[in-house]
Amino acid sequence: MKIILKIFALLLAASSLLLLGRDREYINSFSDVEKGAVERVSKDVLKSIPLYYGDNVIEINGGIPLFDVNDTEGKAFEFYQDTDGLGRAVMAFSCVGRETLPDSEREPISSIRPSGWDSASYDSVQGGSLYNRCHLIAFSLTGENLNPGNLMTGTRNMNNAMGSYERMILDHIRDTGGHVLYRATPYFKGRELLARGILLEGCSVEDGGESVCFAVFIYNVQPGISIDYKTGESYEIQ
Image (cartoon, rainbow, N blue to C red; front, side, top):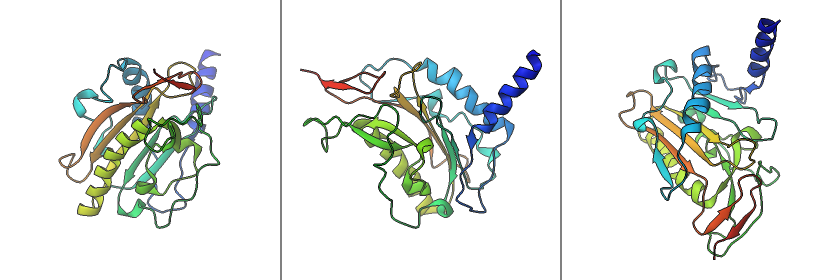
């Protein structure tokens, strides 16, 4: 009976993985090895992230991604995991290149309210709004937009930090025509609705990481603002 239940659980977990390719021929699926890598990241790495002590971005695993760049064979793909039972984004994984770049303007995404969303606004925050609807994998890299599995609530501070790595990837694609394997994994503590931060991993494929190679955790914080990660509510520190 236990074996049957275990098999059922594995099938249920597999069914929750959503491969979105917008009917492009270059989209391909993951091997069992890659699915195992996703499991390993969530259990062994994210739970060991230290508490925030002032550094907005910290290096993980010596800056080396935890996936195997050799598994992709330079084929572009996009993979977005379904939101969990609390409506939280789980993980997005892609191999991006010129063929995945958007060919149209981004549509508004205000209709989507990621978990932990709150419309708080402060004069001390650039642009006023504390939170952004952050794409796990940037629209500029794949054109993936109105997908709840690719959107999370992130502070302006976190979104800006993510942008520097997204631009690094985009510059590499435009300059070389090569591909970058890129994974984004939010970290939620327990049943909290707002992520504590996000793990970003990137590696240029054709040159084995010579041009692009990083593994960092970006904290979902905003200077001068205290945040309740259970709900997303906040207040300004006096």
